[in-house]
Image (cartoon, rainbow, N blue to C red):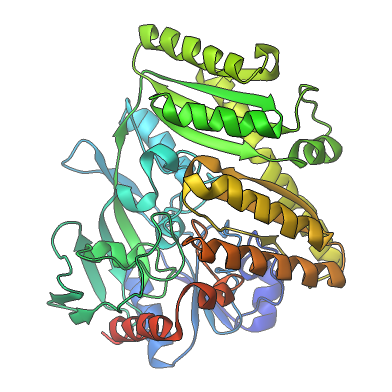
Length: 477
């Protein structure tokens, strides 16, 4: 097992371990290790546990909440935990934590033709262990849900180094309690209200839930994910994708009509004003001159005959909103869809690039964004509130994201310390409004270090203490 000790040695030889896509500064650690198998990982975990050394688990470091940025202690990198294998079940593959979403999809193309792994976070270089630890989701979660829906089995090392294998369907909680031969009796904390449907804030807690779902989305608090059995889905005949350029009123009308059109929508995304202007100024890209909003949607199609029906339906819905086909980009094969996906992802990637540049000049500046979500039927009202808060902040910003799930991201770009404080205040105000509507402060990115303070807006101290007690109980096993 490769390992290294010494703060300065790590800073000089492996500075990548001390940062992620959040641009959070101050990362440091005294020791780091790259285990290649279960025994090496267990040994390192046990040493840290017995010596009471805080441990940060590092995957591909694509997160934007600072979860992989160590603030002292030790780092365990899953980079060398590689391997993908078939199982006895055609639609399930066994994947080690260090593999990426890209490598999984490539494996499916060659070894599992006709099947694919549905979770699609923006960063396809994200590690499988990291996506499970955060219950990651993306545009296609409108149809397929988050990572949680596609995990059948986990192999986990508890903080003590002890190994446990969890198979979906084998252990379920009953009346908030579960008895397990290795974990003992586990009690779920009582929540004052059910968690939102799309939620990545705090531990997953639900009546009658499966034990495996407690570990999914736990952000490493309950242990190191070594390996997972991923469930694959059948590919549709084709996917029809569209980028529609429109004004705000047309966006909301088209969004509503698409939801009600009984189409097999795969995703329903948004870029709000001034996102297109921001992209034009910072990338040199050009777009149809009409409209300052963009709506993205993809639709699963079962046959060529169905494709004709889909195209006719979309054309009719555009006409109802007064949107010209000239203001619509379409993608009907893999190459065209890839171009549309790259365009949609260009916005957060551009923001991250700018923030990284600003951070290099001012170490206090880091990723400032919201991950809040409300019920989809509340989104238009909620967006109006977001817009007012963002404008009052006087900080440059863009808004985009998963409109079909009531989940829009506001990304703010502070240029100095004063704007940084205003941006952080705006994010908190937006989170407060989401909670008022019964929503979440974090819908897909987890809380990490940057969003952890927002948990107190969503949960009472008693609820937070209950989650901490549950973590302590499992960590001691």
